[in-house]
Image 1 (cartoon, one colour):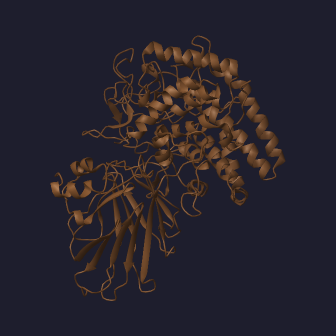
Image 2: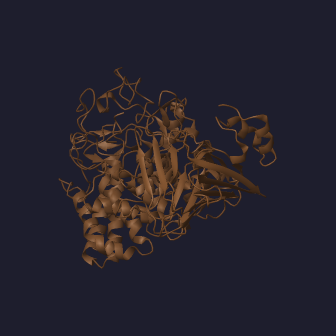
Image 3: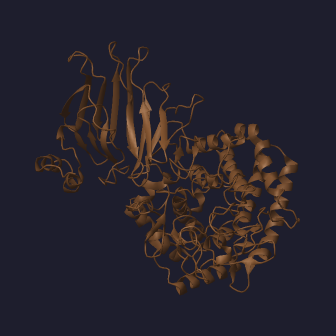
Length: 640
């Protein structure tokens, strides 16, 4: 997005023997161990595997399993390198490991500056005050190339992260972080260039001479009917929160911990957050969404808003996304006061969105025409109208208008809650006008599906976009008979073109985008713009038909809405299996990542982890029971 375009040593046999007596995965663990083999400082349980430094208070490695099933993903952490100045001792009592770090400048009998205790699913880090030596912070050095860990919490006015907090590791689970001194703030930062993030826990001070931090390994997910102990849903349980990544540099939810914050993604974060149980203590995921929105309400910037050179105007999906996210926050317990404070700001987003309808037909518009052949060679000076920003969406955008329809109905709900009766009636009427115009504008009788956008010259651009028809059906813009006919056409086209690798997710489009409608012409087809006249060499690359988890939710949701469970399950369970392997967040040696792949699985992405890939987790609650949805989630059912 703004940055979006820029681009062992085996453990000893003795160690293996010690581990084998403690854990059924011993052979795998021993084979994975690197550079260190000090079994005194190695802890293994069904929830945790940790290796501690023999020279300073830090982890050398950490793996967790939120479900406590002994599963091991990638190492979360990296060491800062050899450090000295500490005397280290370790002891075991039953299933508990205790590691003590004393300053070599202090008396050997003095209290340890840091003590680590591991037992079951908990790690307790304790710091004791020493009048002669100030305890250094205990730091977590997250290696984002190995695992895109994040820390979810609220930022204080001083820029520090407030307690309690939640560390989350995609595909592994979470660790609730609490402290006996909750007033302490944590230092949290990240680096995109280094692909690292750092969290520092301050040690004891003179006023607080004993400080204890507790890390509890858990899995946080909605309590759904019907999944019980079914292991097929374990990836859902471990990875429900994978879509939430907090970037400390911008203090907002983002593509990942070290990437851009994109306002047109905020509704995805809010939809997951709205169904999430409390993260830790009273901290909720929606509170973090609210803080992200507060930043924009206070005049902050996020990708999708006007900026040179990317956007001459706000994208068609940005204001709708902000309004939908705000509606989720307003419906939350305690959201009434927040809505009262911010109603006019949220309303201004809605009015800015509506002001783009320059011909009065009820559809919102983008300031770029979307006409074919307007995109120059090389790096484009501006971007299209929505999230799919290497495809020439413009003017009347089918995806953006579907979001706008949901946003208008959500705005009507907020107006009613705020006692704004005139606004309530007005926004409902405008939503209905949009719905009346939608099908007429975007349905393509030649293909029997919805086109992606109608450009200013009147041409409908249709490349069999799965997500466009999916969102229109799910949001109630298409009636059931029409919706089933559209899905029939799309699935038949999918069979015709031979796409079957559902573990990779879904392509955004099933046939290649025509070269005149391709935007980013760098990289010899790297971003979907090839050199052949038919653009066949650009197809399957990145947003031009590349396979991804991003927006697969809308196809799944449409199928489940229509009662086509078997067709949806074929896609969903293949994706769940891939989530179980962390298949959407791997990197090759040359830096390409699996957030986008060609249909044969060849990686073409670059983010490392793209949160949108995990929005498809929302299909599981939809599949299991519509009762779990918040009453105002759906803008309208209309599937009759």
